[in-house]
Length: 344
Image (cartoon, rainbow, N blue to C red):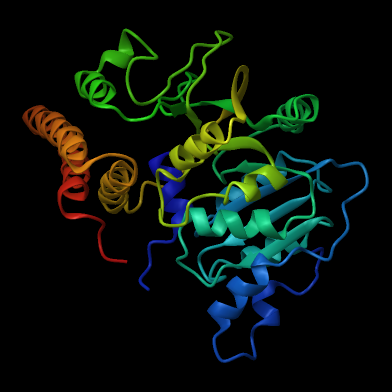
């Protein structure tokens, strides 16, 4: 997940067509946020829309403007579920209600990306769900091609498109590989620029096959039943590394995932950079959490030390070049590695 996506989806505040939203159903209870979350986990009572084999699932955090732009590019009857992590403040429910096959879920606010995304997935009645981001611009043709992959291969759990940045190039972070001391060192040294499969994060070349060990969920078709049987996104990750954890679960189950380097989706279309240092600290903290889940303490310390040293060098270099904002972002990542997540 990119930093813009994380800002939009996570909800960093402390803490069906025109059918009543989950939040409306919970309005008269003692704890609206808790009731909204409980209701969201239940399957929708709405039947599958004729002519559609999948539902698009989005997580929103103050993302109404992005959603409006996205919906303009999609058929009005495309099934869509939007899980709102901002307590309805930008009236995303009204936007979703205009769509005949739209569903709105109020997460209760500030649930984080993994938990909010799981709410949309659990409540869907579709066999296939396409996960997207408000600032991505997938076409129906691309989404259908990803779903077709799943229909052809019963052992394929996810099929993901290649995300393109605003410069038209494939993004760094279309997925990646399990962290090891060697891969962390290659990442710190920037070796991915020479050997694309050598470090932590994937930047695929168009139409050249690449097999990362985990994939970003910015435009990913998912076999819903298998996803839920694997536990969905790991909700111990507020934001970041939930996609890495899913990739690991898929591999451990002997199932498959696929990156399509011939299908491209524009990404970062005007995404907000608000809260960037907050998110970079969270990103560092999530990486350490993931490392601790799957590595011995000594190995964790080796990888964390390499990351700290590498980003300290990048911080110093950015300051020397007068790039204060970039330096602050690198410093925030280091803070996350060393002291943990920022207050929510």
